[in-house]
Image (tube, rainbow, N blue to C red):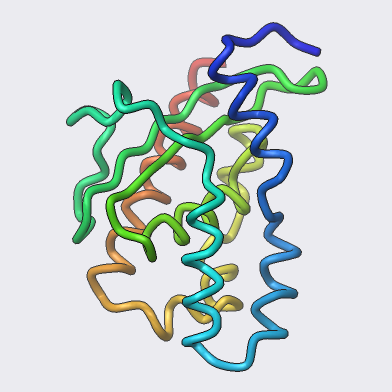
Length: 158
């Protein structure tokens, strides 16, 4: 096991219980309508690893979101690879669920892997592009841009 800060170890352990994007796609296929999918997203939001209040700063806030969203990214070693660890939180239940989707897509990926992911394709498969309001979509893309920006910075520096 790599050396990590205590809070990171706690988050990593919790991330092992987080849903994968493959499981999420399967679950959405099984759920028959948007209302059931929305309820499922809200349930996923309740399972998010906690974000310390000290991380809920203006610098970590994602702008463009209708609700308050905070997001941090760290590069950490996992199984001999440098991967992104994302921590995020929101004051809105549905947005917490969208954060869970974001984690399912990007968590524990290398910066190069993050930049190669076609996130819009996943959002289309999940029908988020169809059912989310324009403001929610903008907020979700703001979170995506924050993660991708960090990944770009990390690839440029290595």
